[in-house]
Image (cartoon, rainbow, N blue to C red; front, side):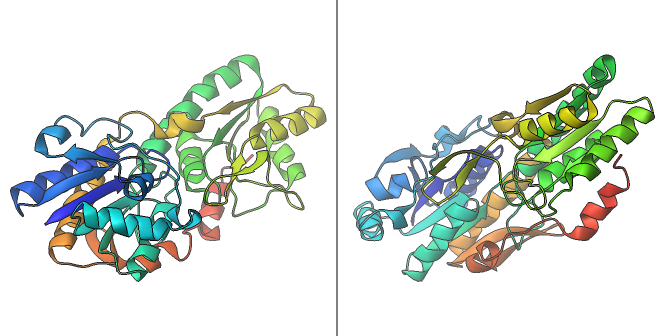
Length: 341
């Protein structure tokens, strides 16, 4: 069997671990041949491939990013895109495709399955917002990076008696902000799921100063004030219709500084959260996903995604994973709110 592999969407720690596991088991145990598609869905759309064998995956387990490259190419936005993919897969002799990605990448995989393609999905996103899986690889690394940043911000905040805001990723789901804010001891956490009241946030800040400590706020990029709108970088959209978020931290710092008179600064972690070497947890999870993905190919479990439920790797329908985003439940946010102010 000849199997194609692609990585789509934003890069994420652990992608190379998946690729390595897929190839190692697929070649050694099943005798499969693998073809790597470059730059997400652009690869099968334009027929751009790279060799993918055991020698090409040696030493990549601890490496961040993806040796296959990635992009946010959406073949359904390209005229005749699906027909072109079908033509290229046929000409390359591809029998099955393993798509590693998040909501958008696996959304395309779901549609391709409906068109009769043999596709297996692997969940990837630092946001941890894919349904049907307890965790996605990359999330633990992002939270670890953000938590360490908040730890460092505490010391400079105390030294200068200023308000420090840490802006983390999270367009529609605040999992990174929730976990890193709790782990880092932030005095307030703002997430997209719960629109915030600016006066309440200012109250947390003033309460912290009254206790002779400097406030630290952890804010997801998609957080928005009550009766407000998302803070965006500009009006442009990517191929999947997403606006570029940026600026909620700076907006919040200016508002708080105006009211309290205390200096407020913002640190935007941005791509730092999803770059670099994956944590041990993410290496193990990504490896298990890869091993089970290629076994799903062997079992011809087309249209499914491998997922973590409890401590087990299971298979779920692709549409179950991409149909609804997994957002932070109110009960989880209320737990964290015990430490606000």
